[in-house]
Image 1 (tube, rainbow over the protein chains, first blue to last red):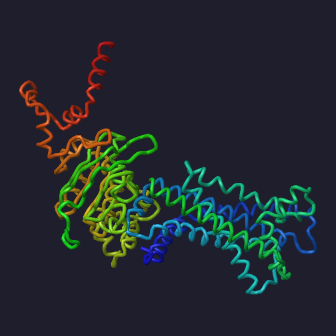
Image 2: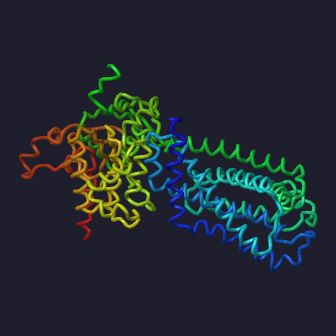
Image 3: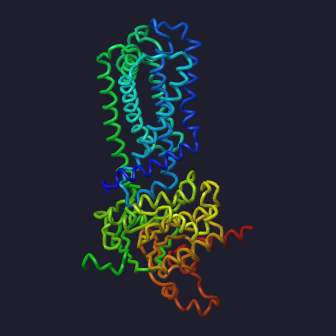
Length: 255
Length: 268
């Protein structure tokens, strides 16, 4: 059946992408909250936050991008859960297709729609004064990290979608992920935080990712944080993927 | 038996057992279905009909026993089984956001068929959905959804079709439309396994009827054969022929409801 994997995934990706293009509100609502946060921090709190010589919006943007991704993946859990409720999931499972393509289609849909939301957020940031002299290579690196982070979180969303008992539950798991950037270097430098909070902030995945993207945007040489960031992304990706596939196997074996 | 000769019984089930934790849903189910026939699995809610269908369509693994579709074992050769079957589940498994035509094209592509568009258009015509084909399924009536659902099951001409409670929740008119489609299918040589809790549905459609009760098949035969299960003495005293409903209630031993109604009446 693996011979059909690419073809089946493409067909199913086409299906879920139609869901998104027919109800673009998922992309818009994904982008609105991060944009609102960005406005709030740039025009309300930002004046009181001292981050250095650069404009605050440039300091802020990496964290906002991660919040955008976390917003987007709550829809993955929701869409997967809806599929399982409606019976179309069982129809797919009873067809002669590569079974994992059902999950991959959802994951890739999240990556594509997440990228669209990210582009919208970056355009708004440009209007607010975000500027970057980053070259093509640096932008590619930023996109690469964001895609990796999206995939890692999406596989967590798949676990939530497969195991949730309600549609709300399938989406709610992403709320803690949305708040993770607040306890990181995304909004304020971590050095102002009290000891234990600072220790958490410095050692959680978001800080290393935010710092790496920030270095790339501002054309600073990327520190070792890029390796920490990549290790977090790949590590979460592998663990979440393995758990998601195991959950999926159990789900389709037991009904 | 050689691989090339198709088995006389495309569906064979032997000693099937399945438990969900402490709940023994299936306690040894045996039956076979002849090619091109309609076989009705009859039972009350929770009797295990859907569990049987899920095991046969490789969505669920049995705890014990064997089942084969077109000679392929459902556990060991699940990929081959999925090539041979088509499932219409209990709830219309259609994509609400896509149009009717897109739903059909989707399944045709997933079955790796050429001319998916042509297949979709043919089926829309056959199921009186040609005008609605370009509309989102969320605008369809229950009957239209079910028709689309069954049309999706026909793509690829699978030799064995499972219909799990195909008319539950349908109005009488749509029900007759579905019955018509099912008869057409069997007429073309497709083997149909149908589950239902409607006794008249089994009576009207099925060539053979099996009654699943407390995890076992307690009766299996044609309608005429099942009618003979009642003692003939009863026919002498009661003027009307027993309906299948009488037979079902008698042999599953659910006579308790009748006395309950009687006692209600004495109270009022």
